[in-house]
Length: 409
Image (cartoon, rainbow, N blue to C red; front, top):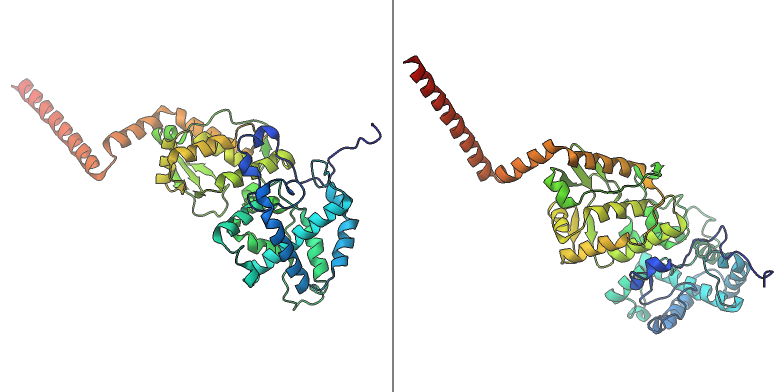
C-alpha cells in the first residue's frame, strides 16, 4: 500500500479542484454549463453530453484543414500523458487510452472553435453553436478553473498541426496564442499584446490580463492585513469623493489622494461573479503569495456592504449595474471573500486603506462634509446659505453700530 503512495501534485500542477469550503458557496460558478473540457467534468453531468457530438464534429473539421495526421497527434499525446496527469491536483481515474481520447477531442474542438472565431468562417454545421446564448456559455465554460487543459499541450498539438507555420516569416497562419487572445479579447481590458506571454491555461490568461499595470507587476506584498475599511456610505459622509479612474485600463489600479478614491469602472454583469470566483480560486490554489485579484475583491467587500453603497458607486460611475437590483450586487461582493485564506496583502492597497481610515478619523473632514451636504448640496441651497450668512453679518454689524451709538450718547 505504501509503495503505491505518491504525491498527487507535482511542479507542473496548475489545474485544481476548487476547495470544498469555497465551492459550496456557489457550485454553479465552478461547474460547466454546456461543454466539459479536460478530465474533471468529463461526462460529469447529463446536460454536457449533447456537446460531445459537436466536439467530435469540430475536431474532425480541424484535422481536415491541418498539415498533420491523426496518428501524429496520438503519438504526441501518449508521450506527454504522464506530464499531463501531473498538471491536475486530483488523481485522474482514467486509463491512458481514455485520457488520450479526452485530450484529442477537446483540443481539436478548441482549435476549430478559435480558428472559426478568428477568421469568422462558419460552416452550415455551425448553426447550433452560433446561437448567442450558447456561444456566450461556451466562452464562460472555457474560463472555469476546473474545466481546463494545460496550455503547453494545446500549443504543442497546434504547432504539430502546422509544422511549416514558423518556416517563413511571411506565413499568414496565426500562432495559437494569437488565436487565444482573439477569442478572449473581451476580457483583455488592459490591451495586453500576445507577444512573449506565458500562461498555464485559459483561467490563468484572464488573470494575466488584469495584472498588466506596472504598479501591479512590481508591487510589494506585506504580511500585515487590512483589519477594517469603512464602507462607501461611511467614507462619503466623511468627505471622501469617488471617481472613475478613466486614465487606467487596469481594473486593479486603485488610487487615493487628496480625499479622492479613484477606481476604474467595473461593469457588474451576469457572469461577473463566475469570473471573480474562479480567479480567486486560482489564486487560493496556485498564487497564494501573489493574490492580486483577491486583494481587489477584499477592497470591494469592504466598500460594499449594502445596496446603498452600490447606489453611491453607481452614481459616481465607478460601478455599472447590469444586474438591476442593488442588493443583488451587494450580496455578490459580500460573498466573494467568504472562506478565503489571505496570507498577505498588496502593499500599495494596504497603505491606501490606512490613508482612507486616517482621513475618516479626522473630524475636520467630517465637519466639512456635513456643511457641504447640509448647506451646499445644490446651487440654490448654496446661494441661500450665502445670503443667510450675509444677512447674519449685516445684522451683526447693525447691532454693533447700534450699541456703539448708544455708548456714544
